[in-house]
Image (cartoon, rainbow, N blue to C red; front, side):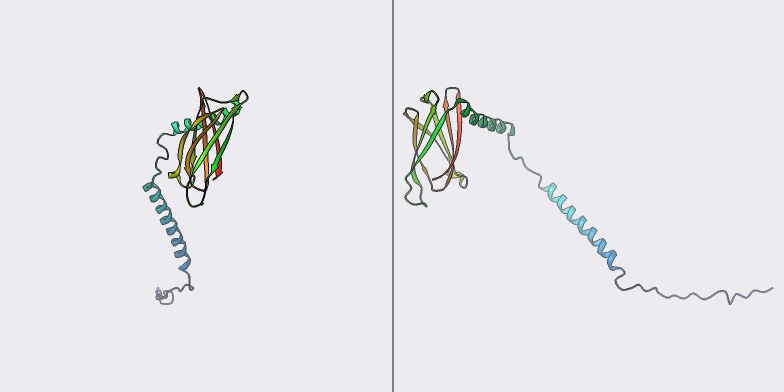
Length: 177
């Protein structure tokens, strides 16, 4: 018995399988997207670790207490029923130049004029903090307190503090002079 293997065994041919054009493009694009996401996230992580947030306020508890005291002073004016009239004499000649201003505060209560108090006016320039001033007004009598200061033309915020004995009030006003 003899076997004929010539018909059953075929020689191996090496033909390359051809893929359509762009077959490898999509896997490369997907890999690049993941790579870009990895690089961007890594960069943000590195920047966040390198630039850790600094302390915003050295003593937040004390600042919070001071702010609460300010709120209490504002509310106290209504409780005491003290009324302040704040006037500024405008001696401005030219808008570009600063000029002397005459500040006057009249403080009254339901019992009459508030005399013997200490009145301070803190002038705050929101756009230019180096122009801020704080002056103590002199008592003229009958609840009228006055003083001179120099203010440039523009928007100002005024914090008027009236202290008499243990009582203290704070009035805030915003004006253009």
